[in-house]
Image (cartoon, rainbow, N blue to C red; front, side, top):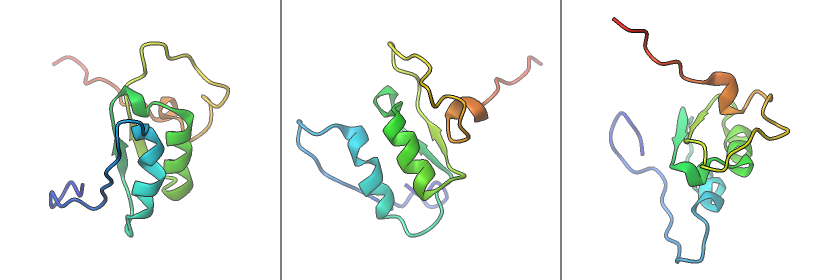
Length: 93
């Protein structure tokens, strides 16, 4: 979705047997312009999602909460990992 206009810029329809995170690459392929961020639930906290986004839009941020069983991967220190660009909480007023 384009955050400025609310317009849907990519879509896909899958059946119940398809992993949603596997559709990130095909969805990104539908977008002609730049992507600032990709947001999803914990199912999108996968190395393949980060890699697909980084490959097509190196400056884009992937925003997905870690899965309950998440552990740091071998690639946790690379530039495209969300950990390197974590959003800091606002300081108390």
